[in-house]
Length: 575
Image (cartoon, rainbow, N blue to C red):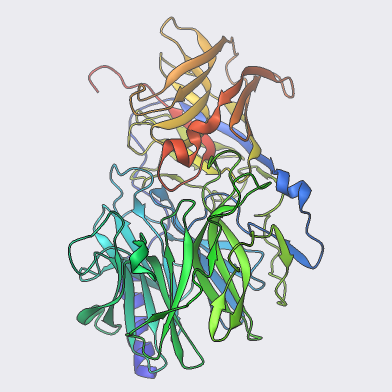
């Protein structure tokens, strides 16, 4: 084992030697206006928060509200670690720590520096898909897929806070959702979703494969082997078996995977074998988790449950994290796919997360585990968070679009200052934007901003964004007549102009250095937009805008809405 540990640590050191903090190249040299944000406040609550209030011995689902999809959880001793998908948002792959499985502190981001990956001009639902976590001999492993940007890779760290190594690419591992399984004898194998063994017989026909992995050589070994074709009931033509994990318990190897796609047909299934390499036999009463087939008119529904990850606790209990969504209408949700937690019951040698026909509870008894310290910021229930920008760095939970190659932001005297650049939201580029997840159906984001446009088209303010073709902008701009105004712009499809269509406007005359206050309020599928020229004196610019354009159903993809700050300088002619 000592030799294995030494080689594993060498792998980490080799990648981490190139690690550096999130510090892109030098700032832009062109003189552009800048926007200064004094603070940013997020406030949210849901109908379920009032209807289902947990007692001191209970926790509330979801445990991580907002777009935290494809959750992977792992235990090392008494500590639990978690990572989830971020697609083309950056920093990517947030890493959390907990000791009670309910409350989570974000301790880092595994993809946190330019040069690790190249997102280019990828759509915001491409890039890094479902990550998985493993641990062996003091080394943490994340396997992940960078979709449309080279494929599957492995990164390592001796401290889950980071730094994480540069990627080791896995050319023999096709498809998505790779997971690294260590057997008791130290051998390793990667399971993943790939193409079927022959021509696809129908749309969504996929398979689960496995291939050996040599940790010391950092490469796959041998030939891949088919573990599951189509799904647990091939006659029913199941779609998208994915997110595979292998766990070992009581002499059995369990293959746990999702089935049915990520929409309302989503589910989790289980198979088992006496060998890690199969053959695997399905549980007779699959799925072990789903919400499909339930009445669509049930109150406060939770839907699309699946992509589960099972973990044991030090006292021998088992729990599962999984994704699901909370729609406010007919499959309409802006908060994305969120992370839920439920206990696992073992019956006759099979793991059951939730019996078929039962609804996912909003509250449940807590695991019998020590509380997480230090006390984490709230990620479930109703809460308010105010960012004063008085630290040395932005919160770990804040993200931007794609990967910045220039340092166009700074924290300065309790303010977040953004350089206004020609790159736009909607332009499939890397704009001057930082934001945080919308975590509630009913939520507001507000800020105090100082900005002075220098030419027509310069703008800065708040943004509610789902992707490049679906967003709102509320802020200060200068129009073609030289008049400064507060405007609301909306982009609801790729056919709309890149910067969006002007929906409403109000002319303003601001003294140099004077602030303006901005607020976006979400009420399910309706969004209100307000501004103030004096603190607390809000004026509604536009109410009841169609916020369903930020829903996954209309915008597509796999992410939820984000709320944040943005600055843009209109490009000079010929630039």
